[in-house]
Amino acid sequence: MKQTVYLDVLICLNLFINYFILLACAKFTKIPIRRRRLALGAAVGAASSFIILLPPLPVVPNFLIKLMIAFFVVLATFGLHNLKAFFKNTAIFLLISLCFGGAMIALWFLLKPSGMVINNGAVYFNISPLLLALSTLVCYALLRVFTRLLQARLPQKTVSRVKIVNGGHTCELFGKLDTGSSLIEPFSQSPVIVADFQAVQPVVPEEIKAYYAAPGATSFMQKSTAYPKIRLVPFASVGGEGILPAFKPKQVFIDDHLCVKEIYIALCPGERLSGECRAVINTECIDG
Picture 1 (cartoon, rainbow, N blue to C red):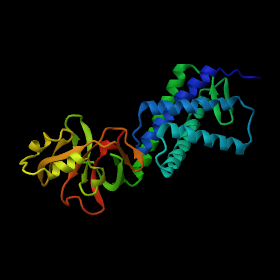
Picture 2 (picture 1 turned 60 degrees about the horizontal axis):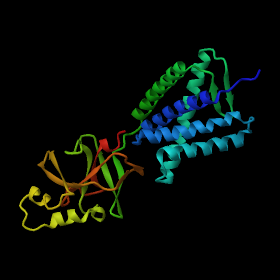
Picture 3 (picture 1 turned 120 degrees about the horizontal axis):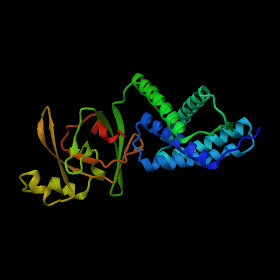
Picture 4 (picture 1 turned 30 degrees about the vertical axis):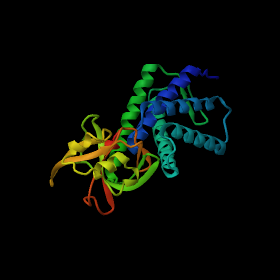
């Protein structure tokens, strides 16, 4: 018996499912990602669902096609900043897709489906929008519980590599992820990374270099009026309190992932941040 496949249902079904798969990937990897990038990746995944209309493919060509589709979906969603991170994200996407698809099929079989088509690794359900939404949300919730349990068993990372791009220059340094750091730029409420001045000097704007060298200034506030691009970030620590000059760079990467949030770099003079880690990272910089 032939099964009718409605293209609008096919697209909507896969768009909805792919969106939540990619959302689960972003949560698992803790990569900050904009909703429109998630929607773009989901759209690429939904477009690939037309593979269901082809005759059944041999195992190897089918696998290669699915792998290429995964590459395009991950590229559209997370971009390509580093090959290692790209392949890692692709592997996680494939694993979560496998778990998510298996859960969806299991739930649908429990509900005694009719009008289900599985071909070339693509799935079609002649399903009502309400049941689709409920099934997907249940699977997503189960997947989130699974990923949280998995992350709880993994060792927590405390050191990350930070790459700062500004004014045509780039610098890289290691930073310590500090859950106790809640430092923000007071006007924009943007999270702040505190970095050693010498470690990030190549990307420091000339205004801040002049700010440090300004002769005769008796306070931060006096100097800041001469350099309006500088933001002053108040801080308090065990050793005391004070104000740090900060600037907003063009781009910030943490462990090869582009931070989509607006982030400020506050500069710590002297050798207060010595050793391997030359920066302190507010975890708000990476939390999606």
